[in-house]
Image (tube, rainbow, N blue to C red; front, side, top):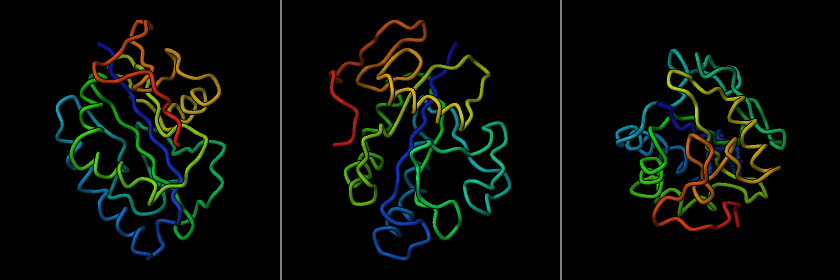
Length: 185
Protein backbone atom coordinates (compact mmCIF):
# COMPACT_ATOMS: atom_id res chain seq x y z
CA UNK A 1 0.00 0.00 0.00
CA UNK A 2 1.45 3.39 -0.94
CA UNK A 3 2.33 5.98 1.65
CA UNK A 4 2.03 9.74 1.47
CA UNK A 5 5.23 11.79 1.52
CA UNK A 6 5.11 15.39 2.76
CA UNK A 7 7.85 17.98 2.34
CA UNK A 8 7.51 21.41 3.94
CA UNK A 9 9.81 24.37 3.45
CA UNK A 10 9.81 27.91 4.75
CA UNK A 11 12.27 30.79 4.83
CA UNK A 12 12.59 32.31 8.28
CA UNK A 13 12.72 36.06 8.77
CA UNK A 14 15.92 35.69 10.77
CA UNK A 15 18.57 32.98 11.16
CA UNK A 16 17.91 30.14 13.60
CA UNK A 17 20.96 31.31 15.59
CA UNK A 18 19.39 34.76 16.09
CA UNK A 19 18.69 35.26 19.83
CA UNK A 20 15.66 37.50 19.09
CA UNK A 21 12.51 36.52 21.02
CA UNK A 22 10.46 35.54 17.96
CA UNK A 23 13.21 33.29 16.61
CA UNK A 24 13.67 31.63 20.01
CA UNK A 25 9.91 31.23 20.32
CA UNK A 26 9.74 29.42 16.98
CA UNK A 27 12.72 27.22 17.80
CA UNK A 28 11.48 26.39 21.30
CA UNK A 29 7.97 25.46 20.13
CA UNK A 30 9.18 23.17 17.34
CA UNK A 31 10.08 20.17 19.51
CA UNK A 32 6.67 20.11 21.22
CA UNK A 33 4.96 20.33 17.82
CA UNK A 34 7.10 17.48 16.41
CA UNK A 35 6.43 15.35 19.48
CA UNK A 36 2.66 15.85 19.17
CA UNK A 37 2.63 15.21 15.41
CA UNK A 38 4.65 12.03 15.98
CA UNK A 39 1.88 10.66 18.21
CA UNK A 40 -0.88 11.30 15.68
CA UNK A 41 -2.64 8.31 14.09
CA UNK A 42 -1.50 7.93 10.49
CA UNK A 43 1.97 9.37 11.11
CA UNK A 44 4.69 6.93 10.07
CA UNK A 45 8.07 8.68 10.25
CA UNK A 46 10.01 11.89 9.66
CA UNK A 47 13.54 12.70 8.65
CA UNK A 48 15.75 13.15 11.67
CA UNK A 49 19.52 13.35 11.64
CA UNK A 50 21.53 10.39 12.88
CA UNK A 51 23.51 10.51 16.11
CA UNK A 52 22.02 13.57 17.76
CA UNK A 53 22.29 15.90 14.82
CA UNK A 54 25.13 18.24 15.74
CA UNK A 55 25.75 20.74 12.94
CA UNK A 56 23.68 22.47 10.30
CA UNK A 57 21.02 20.86 8.14
CA UNK A 58 23.50 20.72 5.27
CA UNK A 59 26.26 18.76 6.98
CA UNK A 60 24.18 16.27 8.96
CA UNK A 61 23.81 12.57 8.23
CA UNK A 62 20.13 12.03 7.35
CA UNK A 63 20.51 8.31 6.67
CA UNK A 64 17.98 6.88 4.19
CA UNK A 65 16.39 10.36 3.81
CA UNK A 66 19.45 11.39 1.78
CA UNK A 67 21.54 14.52 1.63
CA UNK A 68 19.78 17.66 2.79
CA UNK A 69 18.61 19.85 -0.09
CA UNK A 70 16.72 23.13 -0.49
CA UNK A 71 14.79 24.72 -3.36
CA UNK A 72 16.82 26.74 -5.87
CA UNK A 73 15.08 29.92 -4.73
CA UNK A 74 16.42 29.69 -1.15
CA UNK A 75 19.01 32.43 -0.98
CA UNK A 76 19.89 32.73 2.67
CA UNK A 77 22.75 31.17 4.59
CA UNK A 78 24.00 27.64 4.96
CA UNK A 79 26.20 28.01 8.05
CA UNK A 80 25.21 27.63 11.70
CA UNK A 81 25.18 31.42 12.05
CA UNK A 82 23.22 32.22 8.88
CA UNK A 83 20.81 29.35 8.14
CA UNK A 84 17.26 30.74 8.06
CA UNK A 85 14.94 27.92 7.06
CA UNK A 86 12.59 25.33 8.44
CA UNK A 87 12.07 22.11 6.49
CA UNK A 88 10.42 18.80 7.25
CA UNK A 89 10.12 15.53 5.39
CA UNK A 90 7.65 12.94 6.64
CA UNK A 91 5.61 9.87 5.75
CA UNK A 92 1.90 9.35 6.38
CA UNK A 93 -0.66 6.63 5.79
CA UNK A 94 -3.06 8.95 3.96
CA UNK A 95 -4.22 12.54 3.42
CA UNK A 96 -6.88 12.68 6.16
CA UNK A 97 -4.54 11.84 9.06
CA UNK A 98 -1.96 14.32 7.76
CA UNK A 99 -4.60 17.04 7.42
CA UNK A 100 -5.97 16.37 10.89
CA UNK A 101 -2.51 16.47 12.47
CA UNK A 102 -1.46 19.64 10.68
CA UNK A 103 -4.65 21.65 11.12
CA UNK A 104 -5.39 20.86 14.78
CA UNK A 105 -3.70 21.31 18.14
CA UNK A 106 -0.20 22.65 18.58
CA UNK A 107 0.60 22.61 14.87
CA UNK A 108 -2.50 24.67 14.10
CA UNK A 109 -1.42 27.17 16.75
CA UNK A 110 2.01 27.36 15.08
CA UNK A 111 0.40 27.84 11.65
CA UNK A 112 -1.55 30.76 13.05
CA UNK A 113 1.80 32.39 13.92
CA UNK A 114 3.65 31.54 10.68
CA UNK A 115 3.81 35.14 9.43
CA UNK A 116 5.54 36.17 12.66
CA UNK A 117 8.36 33.75 11.85
CA UNK A 118 8.40 33.16 8.10
CA UNK A 119 8.84 35.39 5.08
CA UNK A 120 5.93 35.55 2.68
CA UNK A 121 6.98 34.13 -0.65
CA UNK A 122 5.34 33.31 -3.96
CA UNK A 123 6.33 29.67 -3.47
CA UNK A 124 4.24 26.87 -1.97
CA UNK A 125 5.16 25.88 1.57
CA UNK A 126 4.32 22.18 1.28
CA UNK A 127 3.95 19.39 -1.24
CA UNK A 128 2.61 15.84 -1.15
CA UNK A 129 3.28 12.83 -3.36
CA UNK A 130 2.70 9.10 -3.11
CA UNK A 131 5.55 6.62 -2.60
CA UNK A 132 5.51 2.85 -2.77
CA UNK A 133 5.47 0.91 0.48
CA UNK A 134 9.02 0.54 1.76
CA UNK A 135 10.33 3.61 -0.09
CA UNK A 136 11.89 6.40 1.96
CA UNK A 137 11.58 9.76 0.21
CA UNK A 138 14.70 11.91 0.11
CA UNK A 139 15.20 15.60 0.70
CA UNK A 140 15.99 15.98 -3.00
CA UNK A 141 12.68 14.28 -3.85
CA UNK A 142 10.90 16.85 -1.70
CA UNK A 143 12.70 19.77 -3.31
CA UNK A 144 12.00 18.44 -6.83
CA UNK A 145 8.31 17.95 -6.03
CA UNK A 146 7.98 21.41 -4.43
CA UNK A 147 9.60 23.06 -7.44
CA UNK A 148 7.36 21.03 -9.77
CA UNK A 149 4.30 22.16 -7.81
CA UNK A 150 5.41 25.77 -8.09
CA UNK A 151 6.01 25.49 -11.84
CA UNK A 152 3.02 23.33 -12.84
CA UNK A 153 0.41 23.48 -10.06
CA UNK A 154 -1.08 20.38 -8.47
CA UNK A 155 -0.66 17.20 -10.47
CA UNK A 156 -0.49 13.54 -9.42
CA UNK A 157 3.30 14.06 -9.31
CA UNK A 158 3.15 16.88 -6.73
CA UNK A 159 0.04 18.19 -5.00
CA UNK A 160 -1.51 20.01 -2.05
CA UNK A 161 -4.37 19.32 0.34
CA UNK A 162 -6.70 21.53 -1.68
CA UNK A 163 -5.93 19.91 -5.03
CA UNK A 164 -5.03 16.34 -4.12
CA UNK A 165 -4.79 13.03 -5.90
CA UNK A 166 -5.28 9.39 -4.96
CA UNK A 167 -2.39 6.95 -5.37
CA UNK A 168 -3.75 5.94 -8.79
CA UNK A 169 -3.55 9.58 -9.99
CA UNK A 170 -7.25 10.38 -9.91
CA UNK A 171 -8.28 13.68 -8.32
CA UNK A 172 -9.60 13.32 -4.80
CA UNK A 173 -11.04 15.67 -2.24
CA UNK A 174 -11.03 15.52 1.52
CA UNK A 175 -14.30 16.48 3.16
CA UNK A 176 -14.02 20.00 4.53
CA UNK A 177 -11.34 21.14 2.09
CA UNK A 178 -12.33 23.25 -0.88
CA UNK A 179 -10.44 24.34 -4.00
CA UNK A 180 -8.45 27.20 -2.50
CA UNK A 181 -5.02 28.44 -3.37
CA UNK A 182 -2.17 26.98 -1.32
CA UNK A 183 0.07 29.91 -2.08
CA UNK A 184 1.07 32.07 0.85
CA UNK A 185 -0.94 35.27 0.92
